[in-house]
Length: 359
Image 1 (tube, rainbow, N blue to C red):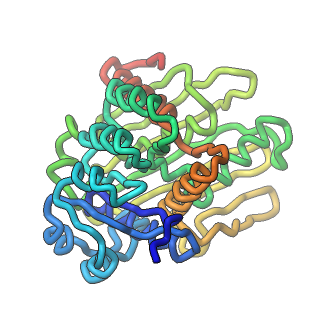
Image 2: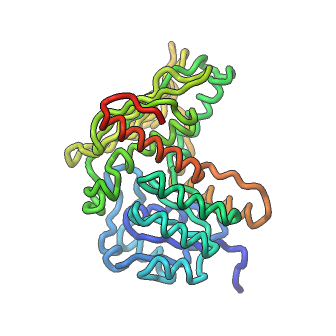
C-alpha cells in the first residue's frame, strides 16, 4: 500500500554535498521521519559512484564510500537531467547540491513544479540572482525554500546564539557579551577542483567557505552597518561593525582554503563574555565545546548529530507542518540568503577599495 503521507526526497547532484545530503536524510529517516529517498539526478551517476570515497578533510563529511552510496540509491529513480527529475512528479522535495551557478534556475524550476527546495549555500554569488529567486518564491508561498545554512544547526553554534541573546537582553549568566572571533581554514577542496578554481563561478573561499561564519554573525546580530575585509578571494579576514545599544564590540571572521595540502581543517570560534570565554574547536578530541571561567573549565554536552542531519530533519518537519496547515518558521530563509550575499559583496568591495564598506 502506498504511504500517501511519506515525503519523497530527490537529490540533485551526487558530488560531495549531494552525498552529504543523502546521509543526512538517511539519519532523519532512521530517527523516525516518514520519508524516503525517491530519486537522484546527476549527469553521470556511474562516475559519481566511482568518485565516492569517504570522510574528507573537513572532518564533517559522512562516511559514504562507493558501496554505501550504491546501496543508498538502490531502487531510486535515476535521472541524468535535473529538470526531468523535478518535472517527473516523483518527489515532494529536492536538495539542490550542484555547482553554485546552477542553483537559482534549478530552484525556480522546482518551485514552479510545486516541489519544496533545500538549496545548498551559497544560493548564488550575486544578490541580483538571489533576488530573482525570491521573486518567484513569493509567487508560490506554499512552497518551502530553505538555503542550507548548516551552521545555524551545527551543535554548539545555536548554543552560542542562545548565550549571546541572553547576554544582550540582560539575562545571561556570564554578564555582558563582548565579541567573538571565527576561524574556518583548510586546504582547497579536493572535489570538483575545476569549479572551485574558477572564482567567477564559485566566488572563491570568501563566498563559498567564509559564508558560514558571515551568515552565523548575521543570524546573531542582524545586518551590519559596515564591514572591513582584507585579503583575497581565497583567504580573507573581516571585521563587522554593528549599531545599536547592545552592539558587540568585536566580531571578526577569518576564512581561507589556500593552506598546504594536508593542513587539518579548522572550524573554531572564541566567544568572549565578561565572566567566561566559550571555545568551539572541531579538532578537540574530547569535547568540541568548552567554557573557561575564573576557577573552572567545563565541557558542554552536545547533540549527537551534525549540522547537515539537523538541517535535513528541520526541513522534513517543516514540510509536515505545511501539509497539516500549521505555521512554519524556517531557521534560514531566502531573505537571509539575500542579506549574507549583499554582505559578502560589500566585503569584496572592501578588499578592492582597501577600506571600510557600508552594507
